Length: 115
Length: 115
Image (cartoon, rainbow over all chains, first blue to last red; front, side, top):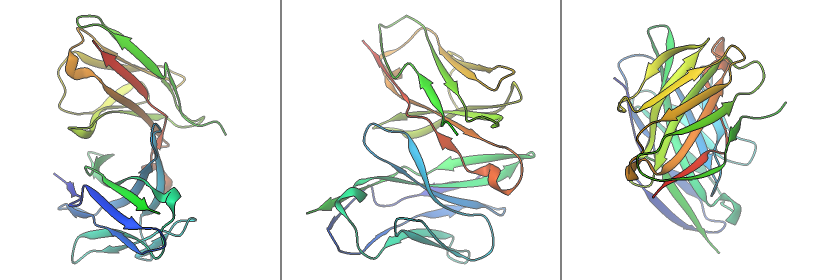
């Protein structure tokens, strides 16, 4: 069975500072990886995904994540955060299970951007 | 293209009652998954439906059930409500075919409060 670990439940960071949200996964088979963001009182929105190809994937709002197979990690980074990035971020892993994709979410990391 | 819609957005019920939540997926999406989100347990998978059949199921008691209709719309039912069922219930749809099928698109959720 696969699992996802987000070690940091909360990450405070000053505006315009860089941030890294950590995500490690465990799986015996190949995986697809995702980062979702949830703003207050809203559902989750897909931020970026890794399916195959280049291990560095980027979002339109400046976030990027790198798939590291040897370290089983998919950390999310942004070089300079904005107040509007305050939200909860979820890492997710998807594996093929009996011909269907089974998705497991991490426990989430709350990013608090301090003005 | 319209996003995932969930009705109602907010619901207050008393212990012992039952409740039905509705989810309309993105047009063309055939898979619908349900999640329960609480501050203590995070995001927990309930079940997934594809072509009117339950494909995956999480570790929830039989009081939680669901179904999917031929137009891919899905309903989730919780019988004999307990205080611990208070949560944000999220619905997510996906294509279930091809490389782009693994990402999920979430609705805004239904906030259920059990008193």
